[in-house]
Amino acid sequence: MSQEPSAISHEPKAMSQTTIPSFLLRSAEKFPEKPAVFHGNKSLTYHELSSLARFQAYWLISQQLGAGFRGGILSDDPFEYISAYFAIQLAGGIVVGLNTQTSERSLKTLLADSGISVVFTQKKFHRYLAPIASQLPALKLIVSDEELPCNGATSGWVDRQATLREDLPIADFPAVESEDIAQIIYTSGTTGSPKGVMLRHANLVANTSSIISYLHLTENDKIMAVLPFFYSYGNSVLLTHIAAGGSLVVNQNFLYPNVILDEMVEREVTGFSGVPSTFALLLNRSAVNKYHFPKLRYITQAGAAMSPKLAGQLQKVFPAVEIFIMYGQTEASARLSYLPPADLERKMGSIGRAIPGVTLKLLDRDGLPVADGETGEIVAVGDNIMAGYWERKQETDQVLRAEGLWTGDLARRDHEGYFYIVSRKSDMIKSGSHRIAPKEIEDILHEHEAVHEVAVVGVEDEILGETIKACVVLKPGVTCMPKELILHCRRNLPAFKVPHEVVFLNELPKTATGKIIKQQLMATEKADG
Amino acid sequence: MNQPISKIRSFIFENFLFDADENSLGNDDSFLEQGIIDSTGVLELVDWLEETFNIKVQDEELVPENLDSVSKLSAFITQKTK
Image 1 (cartoon, rainbow over the protein chains, first blue to last red):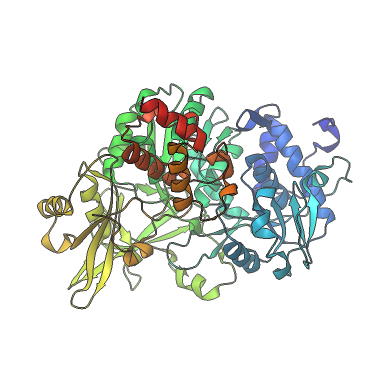
Image 2 (cartoon, rainbow over the protein chains, first blue to last red; image 1 turned 45 degrees about the vertical axis):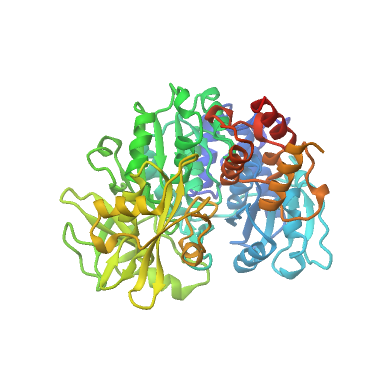
């Protein structure tokens, strides 16, 4: 940046301390020259990042899109993503991070549903945007590094460089309150079509502050960020480290895990966040055992239930690192509970207890509390609970009720108040007179040495209602027969929980965040024996 | 076209690129940069390499230098089967 900061370094008058952009502005004031984000061999300091966000915010304000406009970001460049993120909020807008694994159809659905009026993107995504632009009346501006053809569209292309001009008149940022919607995050849709979760500034601020406190994040922390920012876990990794004044080393391409490991060593990261498939890949298909990470102090895991076996393996490979097993959902900004690292062994399989500021209840179908040891649905109360689903009142009313946010996760609680997930409500298999949680069967199968990954689903059956099918991905180079795995289950499970069928697959169908799409497995044909 | 290269190209087209146009994949195109394969795709690719060419890929060899283009894969296979 060539311009001297003095003309634009004043704190925007209207920006409350309890809004998300204040995190960036405060960190930029305290640590202007510190690198905030690394990507490849480039980096941006806090001052540079803050300046980019301000310039783009000034430009957005000049476009007069209206209070609460939706700004979409479709980009795999972390510098562009992060600066646009804060720019949209500084300008009084709502961020909609868009999945970069997309298609014309899914992009059109999201853009139409959220009424995005400006999208920040790159040339590589033009092939999805150009054909649909003319079918999106709300879309006015497409900011990109190259012009794109939008025949018949009401939208216009804007060169990204034009939004970064340092000579735009300095505007007052619009007044943004903590109750205003800051972001819409579309859920990954493992159960039905994606819904837009509306998160207020207050929700994200509360969750960010709580996570920082239990992870003990400081400005000395540097995280290896491999998760996409457009989902709530990656989003919270971004916000927590910016708020703490720490740094992010971003490499969201997990194609070659050894490359990520090299970067972790080179950049001396102190933290790493992943979902279960991240760790499965690292532990089974990388040279992680040959690396040393002297500066690594914390690993976080969330996104889906990780098998106790995988957690145990992780502990063995990283004995000196604090491992935080965490639980939550997009509807809770991200985080609802965590398991303190010191409890990992004695409470293996637990998701821990509520994070600071959150209350977790276990209720039966009638909304009454269940006793310790009994199964109930997790219902959450806290400042992090969403405002609702974007323009979906019915779905909102189903989960946001008098008692709190009904998470759809069934769990039990031990006498020390530690929670254990039993199942996603919708994953329960009803076979004969039994309701069976697939997770228990999956955990048992994970203990077999041949198994890399497994998902257990119910398949429609005339007589039983549903039968139990185990879809297994074997470890590379290992052979195994279905009979062996069924025998293994028979030795470890009650008879009614033993899978009726075991199929071997090359891979399990997953969403962009690595969550297994069980619906697809219910329909799948046997791939190979 | 040498044998490994044509086999590799067939595999990539059949499993990742449903575009029938031969010209859409250059032998030196980076899978990483072009977004041709995702992380589970790489594992599938490696399994296929091991089966088809009767080699064992070590964990340390799972790096872009060996795997990240048709040409690099071919050179890697040639070196492993010497």
